[in-house]
Amino acid sequence: MFGSVLIANRGEIALRVARTCRELGIRSIAVYSAADEDSAVVRFADEAVRIGPAAAKASYLYIPAVIEAALKTGAEAVHPGYGFLSEEPDFAEVCASNGLTLIGPPADVIRKLGDKVEARTLMAGTGMPLLPGSLEPVAAADEARRIADGIGYPVILKPAAGGGGKGMQVVSEPGEFAWKYGETTRTALALFGDARVYLERYLNPARHVEIQVLCDTHGNGVHLGERDCSVQRRHQKLVEETPAPGLDPELLAEMGRVAVRSALAAGYVGAGTFEFLVGPDGAFSFMEVNSRIQVEHPVTEMVTGLDLVREQIRIAAGLPLGFSQQDVARRGCAVECRINAEDPDRDFVPAPGTLTEFVPAGGPFVRVDTHGYPGYRVPGAYDSLLAKLVVWGPDRPQALARMRRALGEFRISGPGISTTAGFLEELLDHPAFRSATHSTSLVDEIRAASRVA
Image (cartoon, rainbow, N blue to C red):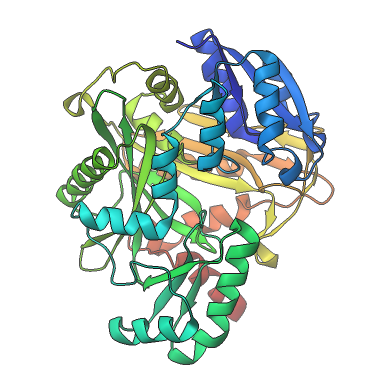
């Protein structure tokens, strides 16, 4: 086991990783930017190193500064969390060349799965079902239109190097390609430094379901079940739950088997997530692989009793999985709501500020992963996630009742601060969500109804 781990991230995930390190007796080393000097992980970690100014490109995304901090503090391994450098193959290579173990998959695996076009081609070779679309980058708007004419509308344009639902554009008719193709390529270049895009059939209505896998360096792989992530705004998740309500258990089991098979075929190591769309006919299709820990991993932890960060660290240290697929047992239902510093009434624009009141929910079977506290300045330079509220119940109705109570109990206020908590309460009461007949378009439907009202 490692003696020290540098956490190359910030916010709630950095604090969450540091806590598991503390439980394992591992020295935790935080890094922070000028905007995060007063962050919770800086206070909690065994050591903290300032790596640059507020701008992420000059701090959390600046590989030389992160590596220098790791070497200066004697770190043996680096945990990248999610976002920032977590799926950057160049970072994995630089870690390896400096004798640092990245707690994640090898660089070549990150590279081939991080490229969404290459990942689709790779998955097609393993027998994974795909939505109709391109297996190569689309070089021009006219080419994209010809492909769409062949597979039918609507289609969705996606950055090949994308992630987090960013930069995607739905195209409903041929005439939209002229500007939407250009907008997607420009956004992709600005966000990811790579203008390549591909397209696939846009499935709507659909459910967004992902499978959590763990693979070690000894050829063993398991899945820990599914998470339903269908409640989204701008293709980014707001609510996650497990089990996926209203879906056939045998379908979900098959998705798990396919995900493990494909992960092992790709040489995957560590914790990863295979994302799928499930159509109204019950058929599932591959979307992408996330080669890192997911924001929503706590719902899986709540029903399995496993600490996924602990498993990541053990795998990176070369230890085999301590259990088989038959040993994985899930109990009850878990739901996560992401509380973001955003204003739902203004199209979810970020709403940073200083927290004058911050009282997390509590009570039986309630978990809050957060870096917030009274007096904390929520910076506007980074992702708006402020807290993850997670509850467990023996079944879905009881879990939703607990979540509804916990959301109402959370108290967050301060100058400039607005959060998604109130909107989430409204969403949980929506008949489609309650009956598990919702799809990825639910948030848009709620907002459209409120505008009409």
